[in-house]
Image 1 (cartoon, rainbow, N blue to C red):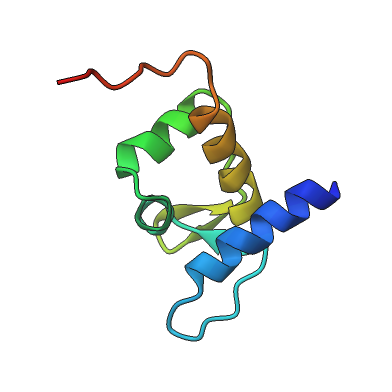
Image 2: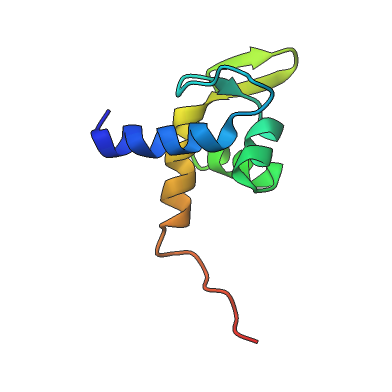
Length: 90
């Protein structure tokens, strides 16, 4: 990983520390957990999966799990995408 990627992930990890859980870049999270942490709807995470930006790496009970580092990459790519619509001015 490049140093800028590591710094970006560390910033996310600092933000995501809750319940004194040990979280690392390889932490696996469910769609609902990821949506909560990234401030998006679960459908957004599923959209990233459908478009191939993220792949499931495991399962927790009936839910697929995804690596946090992959979700960070998908989030950054989506937010920096030139295809994003600009908010309408009021």
